[in-house]
Image (cartoon, rainbow, N blue to C red):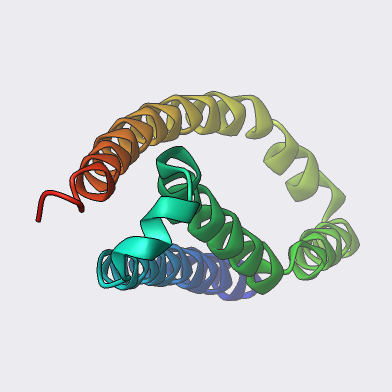
Length: 148
């Protein structure tokens, strides 16, 4: 019964982390879109005083940095650490033999998480490529603002 409680908690934690990531990514996209719109609605004099590279950098880097900080704060790593330590204590208190069997699962879990990490890194590279393309479009839009 206790294992079921931990399994349900793990499932809810996964769902929570997934929804949080999706929400933060949507927020980031929305903020970037609003920033680009606001940037393109500026008077021509605004673009005379600002470097195009700095404006393009602001669209991608500042929004990404702000949303990453928000996500980190919301995830609250201390809460997770407490949950893991409490779970480990509970397992050892209930059954040392079962706890030792669970410890044998660590190498398998490590391999699975390494594979998952590789997958996430590949997705991150794709995201950086897409961000670079978007920054290029913003840079081109800002560069050509005079011709419009």
